[in-house]
Length: 165
Image 1 (cartoon, helix red, strand yellow):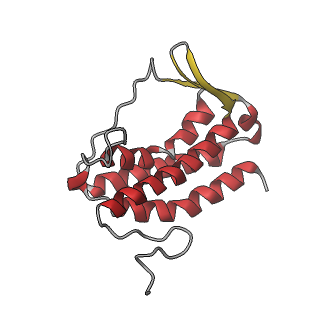
Image 2 (cartoon, helix red, strand yellow; image 1 turned 30 degrees about the horizontal axis):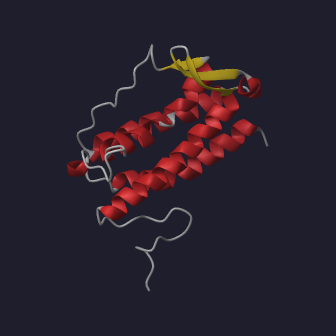
């Protein structure tokens, strides 16, 4: 099986859990954060929703330069908007993988802020990182939801909220 097919399957498999988590985000708590050094809930949820778009960015560009492309969280005003944003980015990620070629995955891709280079990896590693970042930040979101007393959906089996103890 090609690496691209592995990415396609993982993106699809993880999308079900990601969608369930994003559906639980309380829009009225978008400005909440568990610690001053933590992302706000809305920023975290929006970042999770955008991560599938990193697939196309990795495949179609040589780098991300934050100095030339400052990061701005898109305005989200409802869970419907958040889910639509996720679904659009997910569709984009799938479409980019569908037209990708295996040889693209070995090409270099750099993340930088002006002259400061954060990393240079292959495009395949960047796509893997985007998938891993989704899982990582989704777990963070689970902690946020737990702290807000919102039941957590299961990821790889039932959650404590879904179990009958």
